[in-house]
Amino acid sequence: MPLRLLYRIFPHPILTLILVVVWCLLQNTITLGTVVMGLILGFIIPITTAAYWPNRPPLPKPWRLVNYLALVMWDVVVANIEVARIVLFKSNAAMQPNWVVIPLDLRTPEAITMLAGTITLTPGTVSADLSADGTALLVHALDAPDPDAVRDDIKARYESRLKRIFEE
Amino acid sequence: MIATILDILIVASLAVGALFILVGSFGLLKLDNCMSRLHAPTKASTLGIGSLLVASMLNAFAYGDGSLNEVLIMAFLFVTAPITGNFISKTHLHGRRKHTDVPPPPQDKIWATDAKNTGA
Figure 1 (cartoon, rainbow over the protein chains, first blue to last red):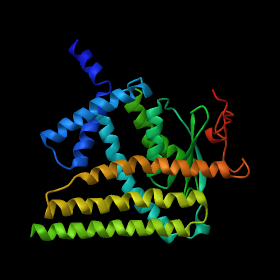
Figure 2 (tube, each protein chain N blue to C red):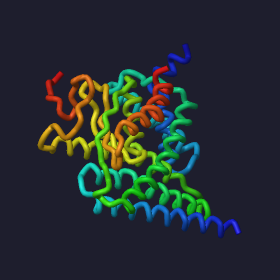
Figure 3 (cartoon, helix red, strand yellow):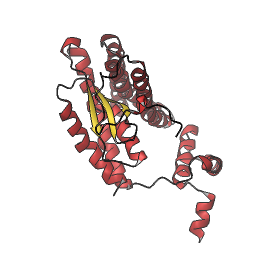
Figure 4 (tube, rainbow over the protein chains, first blue to last red):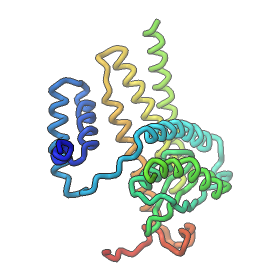
């Protein structure tokens, strides 16, 4: 019963938590005042925006999500070095830009959004478009002589992990 | 001693950040088509600005009260950079002349950018 009351006051608890943290970071101090102000914002904003997202997004497994984010951070660093190497040391003629189609096993919108964002931030790929029915991603690769290898790599490295986080 | 190590770390991350932003800008000039050009700024600038922000945080902790504002900038950058890239590439897809230069999705479907707005 008290839990339901709590959900009535804070319809999106995680959003409230994020708002408090963001507010403290913006103020750059943690005092009672900033936390209380953050809580007030975390109370008002979810209630005023509740009409735009009636469903609470499913809570993924937090530990796996942290794990995934660490993997992506590492890949972002590798991606930057890789792209810098291609840009600096490869002539435009020797580059083989290519389109890659990735059929999706994921169905959750949040998971597909995360996959598209990950693809853009990681080695030599930018996600460009989603098919009209949401079952395939169009990805542009900067230097991919073999598009099938890129597709298999993305499916194995990111999509399988996201599937375990969001859809299990 | 610790101050020296911190100084070296600050200078190193400033240098790395500046280098990656330089490479990103160079890539934007050097690459020869729109979609390839998109790669340089979406990636090089995230790590470039990231390490500049790390330098700023280290400096604040070494010589001031400490500051974590930069974490927010990084978080927002990581969320918005892919969306910017996605919008630019969607605009590119809208502007292309023929529809055969992009592989079709499997099972006779069409890409969302090409779909007619049926109002459904």
